[in-house]
Length: 239
Image (cartoon, rainbow, N blue to C red; front, side, top):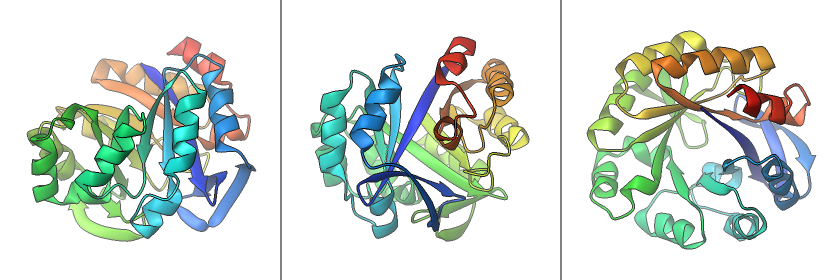
């Protein structure tokens, strides 16, 4: 199981939100590059970067900073936020990013079909962000009527091999992950699942590690690292 630290960028700074609410952003660093270098120094293989400006505005905004991160670290980078057309996917991959995360556009079956037939299908991750079992889109500001369980099945049918699943109600709350919803998804998913949202303590890390037998492939940790509630080296050792 892999541990993936998160670097969320808004206004050129590293921030963390509470349940995706932009008005509740806490700034942790003025330099996303320096923060990525810090997490990479632990020997992680992958860093999860989110362009929050892009997610909210519908168009990627911080690719220049992402390019600087790619150059500065040996860890691979996955990027999400504002990636809503094939041209942007190509631009992001050309910038040296290893994996591209799509969320809002994953609700577009025609787009998923195009991705599934493209040369970079293996580099695309679908981000499913849900609250009370229903998918949210457009930077988590729009509630859809789509069940997360239905979408995870559909994504697999299109040949997408990895899903990043975030329980919005847990994200940034430091209350622990939603184990029940994860177990439900893992029981039906043919894609690999990476969990995000609510990972708060080392005990949470152990609980998620225990789901490896159910098929969980990794966990994204954000606020708990920035608040010093989880030691990244210890989490990596457990996993």
